[in-house]
Image 1 (cartoon, each protein chain N blue to C red):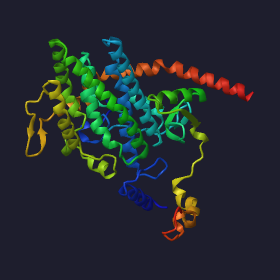
Image 2: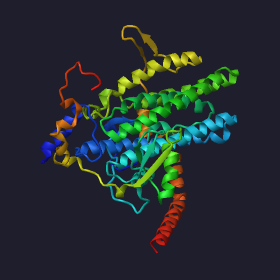
Image 3: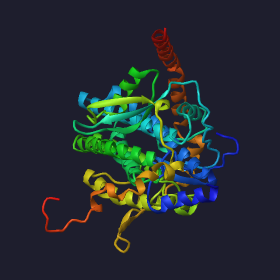
Image 4: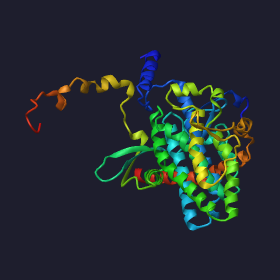
Length: 125
Length: 312
């Protein structure tokens, strides 16, 4: 029991298994522990499909990350191939630079087939 | 951009029913609410292995044992999906576990009830997982992308959990009189705690409005509870068990079942730590965490050694 934890004071949205007290529940500081690195997991669902990001896990090394990814993300034949990538090796665009970063694509409507007017009676175009 | 513009961008995304993604700006209260909720949910999955795990070695057949083992393994998997989602909000998974074992974060009160009877395995699948599904299906549309995606994976697997439980109960009610009594007795114990899983009545749930405005929550506690009761009554009839509420009856005018209020004092007491199994569940989790420390350290030492050899 946490001092000052008055559970009468409010619950917020439920997680899948019940009400969550909002008073006296710490949310964490995000202080990193000396711990196994974070890996992002990508699974190819079946032949012919791209690998798709499914989640993350911690592992001591690459091999353990692959084994854990199999156990956590493919218990029901969800995949035929797995990639694991150290999260700190991924370079990502930042949403806050969304406008300038993706702007070059925005004004090039001529890259899309619908840009071109073709008479309707011309077949197979 | 100043904070007002960022806030407006966030609200526009929510209003358009689009998803908030990890690197987006979000209000601090939104982030904290999600961390509490997702961490609580993850902890519930992990602690939730205990009540049923105890029956794996006592399952009456190899078939039931394999099923229960798969189910409990799923609970561990669900915990992992959810910790992964929580981590995208800037908390460390290890820190969440530390807070759980230090009793600074919560898990669902339902897992603080004991499972003394094998029928409990079936009733948990039927009622507890049934209530969880009623809660979880709307969470698949939660405004926070990683949480919604984790919930989609979880909901696919929960359906197996509920069906295996119900099938187990069907086998028991078609068995001996003693087995039928076991099912009834277990139902009597788990009915009210299952209703409590939806949280306090809407009038006592002041934060629901905010969570709904944020698109974290899609229905109120009482709406979900009603939906669960309406779904469960015909399932109970098919089993031939009686739900332990004399106030339970069909209300033709409302088109729903009427039912009595759960004992909210009990709910509050169990959340506050006075449930039958709170201390036991937490002590077990803490012991497992501490007893596994050498494995984590050994794996790290091995990885360090391999990395040093590659570097040399």
